Length: 355
Image (cartoon, rainbow, N blue to C red; front, side, top):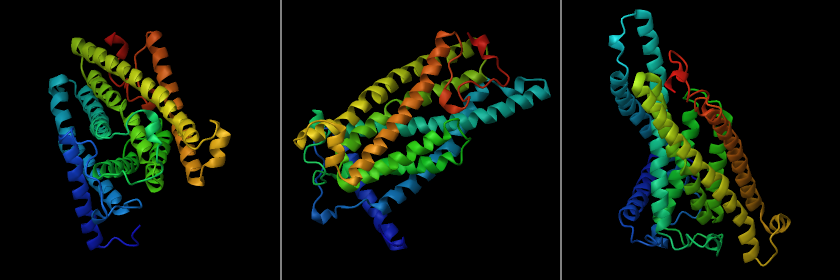
């Protein structure tokens, strides 16, 4: 890591980031590229984690996130919300003021959910495209062959890897600027564990499995944050429109539960298992946790611990989802137990009337 960030180092990091981003984009628009452009010595392969690029992308993402949120998304929300629930038609000044306060609160939540939907959707799409271009995507034993190593790395993979970590650092900072959630600490632990895993896996050369986990972790969230936006509109609407938003929000949220259960409670544990089983098989030892601990390095043990922490968090969030399912079968309104009543705001609206 550079000892200081002077103007020259920042400009160099910017140029390097631009070059890798262009190669990444070429992979996105040309799905027939199977391995991207291999990096050579002349390309100045970042043998260690490219900290300058990482922090530069973090700043870019932070500015982009808050810029789009404040300048575009919140303005768009105001336009749509006024059509759904026009404040000017309310004659009572007290009710009008309460409605305006409610709309202000919902606007902030909607903008937050919209940006998270965009972030997760973009990285899910890009991750799938980048994985499609790799020969080692399947069978799963290929994830561990000739690992750890970096000689297979290409510009598109490196850019995706660093950008993924930068997005999470941006999210870690942004959470402190947003309304505190019910799962604040779980989210922050998740963000930190993810960043540490991405950096460590790059440093020691376990990038293949890192890419697989990245895609799995992002797939479910677009549906969650889309459902939140629909339900925020539900809370502003009335009559038949409110019932329509409620139904659509419930359907999308159920889709989220299905994807979450499949990817994070099914596929992710399988990936964690391959970290032990395939590694042990390739090293010629029996598949046991004890053997893995004996043959693994301290860094590998640390990475396995971080994977376990992420697994625990998935179980906690799965419990929240089970609470939601219980409410459904009990005939109650679906809400998102992860987000401190974000899914059911009772101010001014009796949600039971939407059923």
